[in-house]
Length: 466
Image (cartoon, rainbow, N blue to C red; front, top):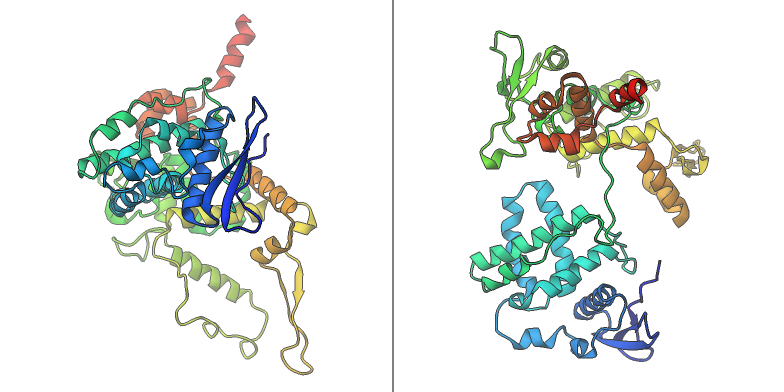
């Protein structure tokens, strides 16, 4: 893999420059970027690198990069807002309009757009610049303080669509001419096998052994949510705010119907019903006693209280010695457990459990013992284990990469449990049943994404006819 030319300062001057080499002629050329360290010079640097990469590493035209403050042509034509100003106005609206997951992903796309074309006139942003930006998504960026890895083809198409949507919004608010989004719509999405963008890995169900391994390291609330996902195929965000008031228990069949208040397609006006059979009912009934009908069944605050009570029951030091319950708590803690688990907190609980269930076999990655200095004269020094941040601080760069790779192989995301349920339902009852349970409007989504085919049937057929 070729090394990306670096952004650097000319010795003895306050100017930034980058040196590019023509891949065909091997000719080298210095490009002046403006004041070293300024946002404009870094913006121009990223644009130069992207155009150089998109042109098969041929030298860009010098006339396009003479102005150190961005493209001079953009500032001379018209008095419309810059891309940076449009992004600011759009984000103010989008952060409230979209769901947290969508707005978080949108923020990544807008940040990259601002990095490359923040000072460009929004009305002058056309298909060519969008393709240059897309090329940077394909190549990634290894020169920044936080390196950006190359994005997958599908993710690039999604981020490109979000950028086009911003310009459509700007045109609808008369910030830019309506011709701009129409021109951007002519940029076709990347197609499989016809681009250098990498293909993303398909999400697979979690191995049952890896699920069972985390049971001793999670609260009973988290384990109940894991089991509910396996038997219902619901998304974690649909189950986390479950309340008794949202569950209809009146059906004579004995199957309960849970209607989440918020779900993925609520803004489209669609209804989402999650049916709870005998296995799901047994899980939920454990949390339905001594609770108001409008309280969350799976409470993070309740799980933390149970954890502290268990630690207190295991205490060996007499209450007359050491800290008593509640004496060492902060008056205004930075973080407190909420009444309901959130999607991020549920995800973090599973990640921590995976780290405990599958520790790295090399002792260098395990927390070591730290012996503190004596608190008073003659007292025995106390010892404690390193925190996760302290372990990470003493590791080398290569060790951090090795630990990250180990965790990538030994961690799993709770959303994959939905794939477990879809695969099991399809194997037992067929594709249409999996579609209905998972709540998909089309069986094509279930077939392509969520339910792995039962290859054992193919093997059995080939034993007979092959």
